[in-house]
Image (cartoon, rainbow, N blue to C red; front, side, top):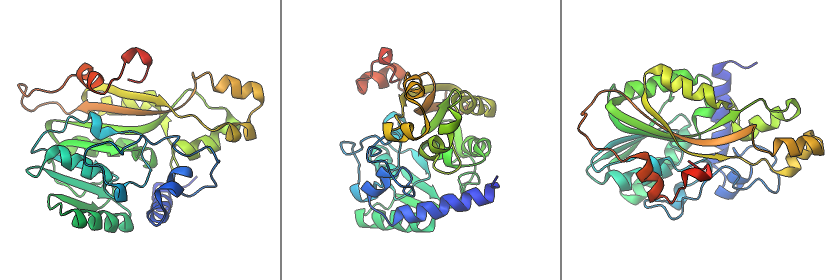
Length: 295
């Protein structure tokens, strides 16, 4: 069993490789470092291309949601993106916060920071900056952010509890986060577990959905909501390597498996009179029917 430092080194090494690859290569191999199934492309990522602020050069195809879509970013906000990669979520957030706001991206892979800074300079975005550092020890002072976003990153971090504690520290009282991430539901078939973790966690692995939400609640966050949820379908040619036909059929019934969730939570305090969009309004704006199970 590798320790936290070794796991971080593995993630850093893989993401350095990802930074040198194209979007299609990265998306088709989950985290850019495996032999892909010919049906893996797009199994996790959501399509950003119609999102205001989207920058194609900054999209490496590594996300599992659209957290900025649900993050309720307002003009003038200070936003922090955890695991900012080449900067795409930061640039989308910058569109929402405007020139009067500020966006900070944090990533621990030097080449990713270089790519993100280069993209920001090309765009002339003087209010978007990128800082090299670990998200479980953020290079940011206390109570700085109005909003924190992150896209498919916490599942890569060995000590998730510590990251959530850092999120609490860095948010202003009354601030909130919207994070898309990968979680597990139920016990995966033992024969599938190794490959399932490759897709869901890439290196360090995802945890149970119930445990994920408990860590957020335990830290002291309020108003915890799952804004969106979708199953991650493992390609059949992968399943068939490890499971019988009957086991594949049972697995695909959906009770047990890998899910992408977008979670909202708020740090207590702040101005109680500040208006915030309700979850039902978000669902309506995004044509999301709660009865369909997507939210």
